Length: 540
Image (tube, rainbow, N blue to C red; front, side, top):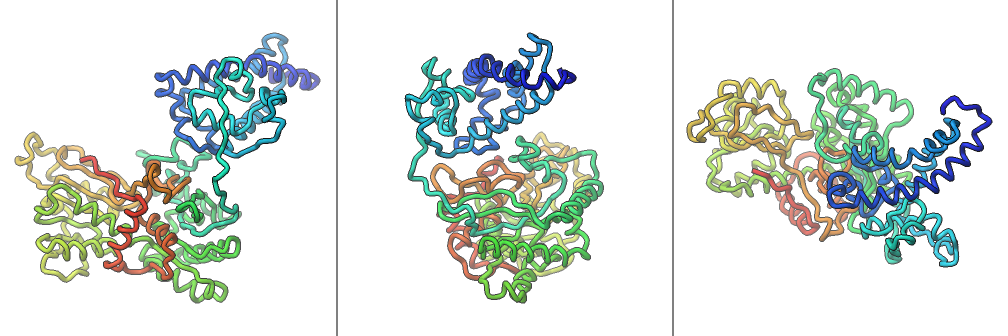
């Protein structure tokens, strides 16, 4: 098959075309209807139908096992002619597969295309070639429009159903971009979340590489980042709509974890951020920018304050109305509400806090001390930044076992936790009152969330907090792929990201950098609730 003479390319293409029309099209129709049997839909095809409002990339989204169904369905296009005539050329196979994917992507484009050649009942093309609206009907109705590229099979078996994409959908200008959330690479697992590499990893927690040391992973990412910076300084990610009127986008600078570990590179990171701000203003007129995760690290730029100062000092940007936000006010509000919403939190005597000296932890503690005057807070730190009778400090990480609720706002080495927990690991857990420790709940708002090894501690639960859920069925606040590549599930968003979006929507005119204003926390939370945001419930 692969070594046939080039003289058979033309006849091979002719045979592959008719094999597709006479074999693949009816086979696909039958297989597609079989996939819609409830058992098969649940086991395989339902994953594809998670997309109601489709994109060209949706054509590639299938369950792993479903791929084998399609191999058996599409293979006859070139296998049947080969078995009949014992000749087929590899270029025809390649061209068929590429053309197939392009036409399939066209069918998922979610656009209106109504030329009379496809819509007139007298035109044969209505039966011989589909339009995106035809396949949108399949995703909307589920039990109609099963055909691959030729709707004639649905007309023949009574499953054709007209679908019209509504004309009242207002399309925003293609170059509109009102807000940019500036991200960065977070390691090898972050690369894998790119849908172009692995469509199954776009949502869900970042994958971990148990046997790959962080040093090796970060060095590899550093080399990739260096290579990328030869050709570009940033790469665009998802684009989404805010409240049906504004456009937001996630753009990452080509920086990897080592750039945020090595102090000598901090100035390079900050220059890349300001360069991105300048480029996006020149291209789209964007004035609102949010800093993601390490791009607002205190050591790098004093929580975004240095970026704000650099923008003000730039001769081009200084009078362009650029706003720089961290969104940390919303994160602090999220953490605070996650704590006070815990069952029996009002009766809690004390909490243990790792990372309370950070601006988010500091704001949370200050607000807790105001609203919960009887609550005592023990902070793991050598430096004392909160002067309050109910606040004590310790350098003993093992002391976390003496507190029912532990809050983590700073990433520590997993070895430190293992060492601190070692004395009580494996203690009796048949009755909670018999355990030699009080700890029952560890709440973690660090990003990325890395589970602590709690083997032997069946009474202690470690949960990620400060993750917001949107309300796609009741609110138009966010639409699109705002949630891809963050290590979260669909329709979830980090509060810092959401806070920056809220600042854009409510037209905040000031920067949100440096320390957090505690009084603004409740205002941000109220605005988020108005837009359908809520903390992801804890499954205790």
